[in-house]
Picture 1 (cartoon, rainbow, N blue to C red):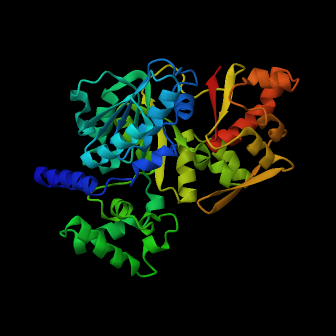
Picture 2: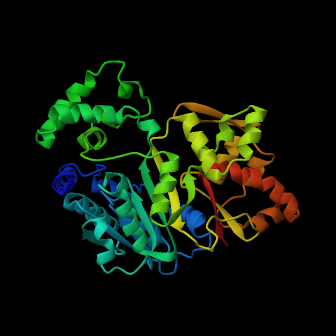
Picture 3: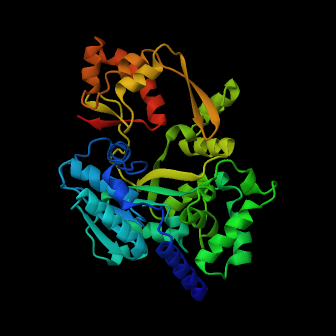
Length: 413
């Protein structure tokens, strides 16, 4: 057992030395900043620190298994933009991946990062000060013992801190593991580059009945990039999780789920019109609702979520209050959103080909036009000449809609 595990550990490390993932050209950082979930500062502030974290004060972030650096660079750049008193610690097994991140940081002129080559399992022995926030995406599901990895992360997490995590989701990856087994049986003993060459030909000729061929939600193997193909279909070790398994996984390490991202995808009421079913859904817990939504949709390839230590009495998710400032996700402008809502009573959004129609709350365009990232809710309320309760009744469904899509968060003024 131990020898087999060691061999798989070596195989995982060799994969990321030969195929750093995701493939990134450091020169691209001259003109773009890749952002996403989890770990955008406004997003993690909303879900972990109730919107009250001041990033102009010291903030320690860890990116564990950071790959080629998207999360680490995003965090470091945003912290630098807030005054450069925060820091990002990057840890990864792959020296090849680390070299990519270091080159990206150098191009950006970031001096708030430190880099370490090693396993996240060794974090408790690396003598770091506790971290306020930990990002670990696409890593834990590749460990021989994911529970041990998550426990190691929790051991270096500060009290009151939180994590942004991503693991593979089972239903949306239907077919992946069938093909993995077939390719391993055929080409598992070949050199890595040869495995890719032979496997691509094999996958191109899979019968139409194959579950991967029939799965419209998985397309990494069709991108033409060897690293993406290898990571999906030739990885020496990975597993996937259903919603109940995510919760059990977190609990095994002394953590509680805060929320899945995007929240709306885990709300079954969005996909139901039957009144009896809706009344039953309202009586369900958040977790049971997420389980139902997962089984209804069947297209989730990953679970992205925030977690905190158990028995944490400090509120996590930001709540609507007069002093809170609504902020929009990068790429969304108040005027652009307002324009898309004007003159409409409903709005159609596609979730991996599943179209969902949302009724638009009253006055949404008028209110969104005032969301500039600086005005507090009380200031927006005053501009509309409303009392607080009247404004709150208008804003609450607007916020539920946009926060559910993960494009609006709250932070303290």
